[in-house]
Image 1 (cartoon, rainbow, N blue to C red):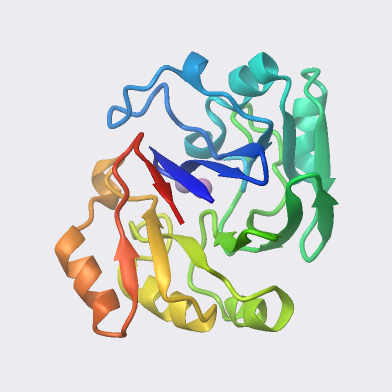
Image 2 (spheres, rainbow, N blue to C red):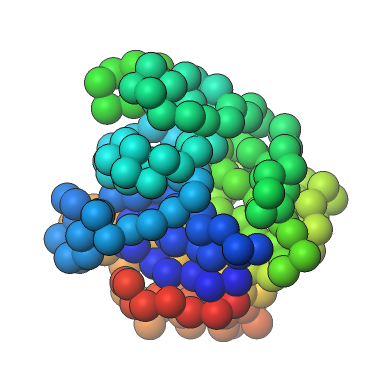
Length: 225
Ligand code: NI
Ligand code: MN
């Protein structure tokens, strides 16, 4: 799978001949100077309705005629804007043409930019013949993470928030990595705003002490996982 970090919780992941865009927050992110018009994708996966996850979803989904995958409430909201979608709810999975997507629990909040109720926030587990990964979205450390090893294929890598304040910080993320039984963690939800600035070296060391790897991807650079 080819993974490109877009800043905050945004990722472009190419797998099984399709391109999945997660939580696009690009045009207002000072750390990312990419042009949203340059982003091509087949699907847009939204973990929850907060602005720092959905900001550019409408524009990019419309331009690419992409399908939005999210919870029922968020997919319905975009449906009213003429964007096609596939609704999921927690614990449910569906087989798409690129693999299986399961929408799993997150402990957070969710409201759409205009104040519309955004349903409950979630994360995604994606699995296909190339592998399996988890994008946690915004979440606290939660005991529900212990359910992943029991219910989804072995994770090859996971994307976890580490910025603290609005989500778990990196110390809790180390415990989350243990709960989900995954040794390779890609960091997200850090450094975008003052509240979530992270000491990268201290965070990496906290993971390596527990025999795990924390990866800070450079924005806009594609990496094979
Ligand atoms: Ni959020
Ligand atoms: Mn957020």
